[in-house]
Length: 357
Image 1 (cartoon, rainbow, N blue to C red):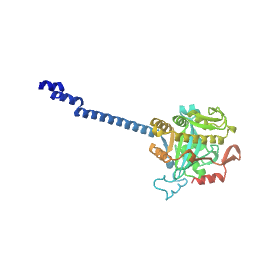
Image 2 (cartoon, rainbow, N blue to C red):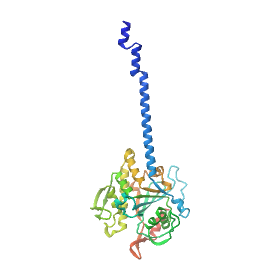
Image 3 (spheres, rainbow, N blue to C red):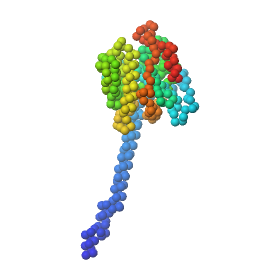
Image 4 (spheres, helix red, strand yellow):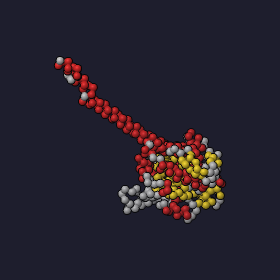
């Protein structure tokens, strides 16, 4: 009886062994080890994916050593106020932001970049961030402004000649980012701390990654060159349409570059509002899409040529809203010898630049 009872109830040595194999302490231990290995594997895969994403996004960025090219022949950096708290950003910043009408690449050509090589700086803005990053001033420079273009170093060696009465956007076409920065610093007396350039396809991809942008226009737009046809009113635009709005000129009264700048400033504020309304931190997939769109078509100076440096700048602007951004256009008047060109209106233009130093 004792023998049969032990076997029947599984309490003998044989039964106890089978119990341990199925669910006893030994089985639980092996199960925990398997779960732990799976968790470690998942974490390693996640870390590898995150590492690849960082490497990919970091590698997207193109940079230009503007400081090295220009040396010390530049406006002085502003002196940082010693009373600023340690946690505050170190002083005000001035950035030259260009939107380039790139002619190279199939995507840019499809978006209206043309079929020739080279590029133009069709959009130029000096962005001034105050020392506390609580306000910003964005100054648009009309591309048709006649300026004295200084002598600029060329990537291939040598220098360009100084030219008076040159159109502002020829600086970029002739000498690239270095000449664009030197020309802006020469005409404003303001040191450009950083340089940021985004091309046609990058801008369109950014808008699409954000889910589009809503803009209200006060006039009808009918521009075959920018491929945009809109009635006056409120429109939700995709990337291609938003790019058309930024480029449109001949569909506006008089084909004015100043009217185009007004649309660009309105579009920029609408984009800031869209970014604020999109909680990218809770949507990693969209955050990656937005970051990939930006970095994939971005050229910066070497001080902003890593994802970490760009993120640091972005974090410092976290409390800045569209309402904190003031948009203005450099004061201009028609050029004396060419009504289709403009020149800086003094002393107003000089006073504006002085306020940003």
